[in-house]
Image (cartoon, rainbow, N blue to C red):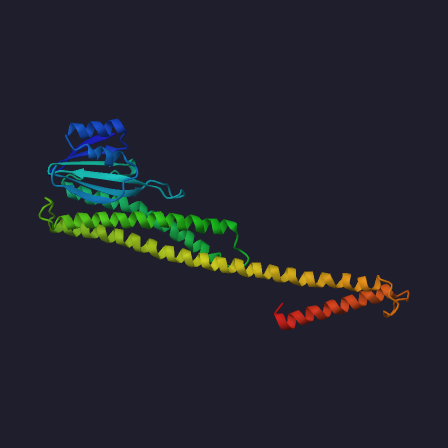
Length: 296
């Protein structure tokens, strides 16, 4: 879908969920460089800001979240290209912004940047809730494979989120610095300077919180690993004790089964009972010794 808006200082061509044909025709109609077609059609473009001094156009690319709240993190590029009197945007339908009656192209760009960051903040709240749930389940008997899988998914999502927000911050910083570059015909008034500073702060806050959550998830992962190792040690301890206990009856019965007459009560009709008594006494002594000296 393509919509055309008239801003106070330029014409805004808004492409929402545009297909290849619409992108190509729009770029050709407004006689913009063909390289913009590649920028707008490439789903793997990374965040950045560029200015072409020869063809007199600027392009800003941001990575926006396109995945749902309960889906693995996926991002897609939002492309903003502009000249002195024209601005063209290509984005997903969820990143449409409401046009204000008195709005110039940079006001519109900053509003779109804030709109792009909003899903990151929503994802931040969701991950924070998941982290709190994992923290509340850190008990010895509650760790299972499902929790470990949740941690792996969170760490994977945080890698994408941290990378995307860091790249977006770099793109915003490049746009900010462009207003101080005399070779680039971009200038902001005092209100716009404050606006883009606010946008940069919001993105910095998102990145900071993702960094904090990544550290917390790593600590939870270490804690879970320690719990699993302790549980494994307990299991091995129990198996070792049982193997020692179960080794005693065959030893005692083996001696008496060889028909050695010198053994106590070997020829008595109560010899089988005596072997049971010896076995129980040795097992009891072994358990007592292990409890006292090895914290069984």
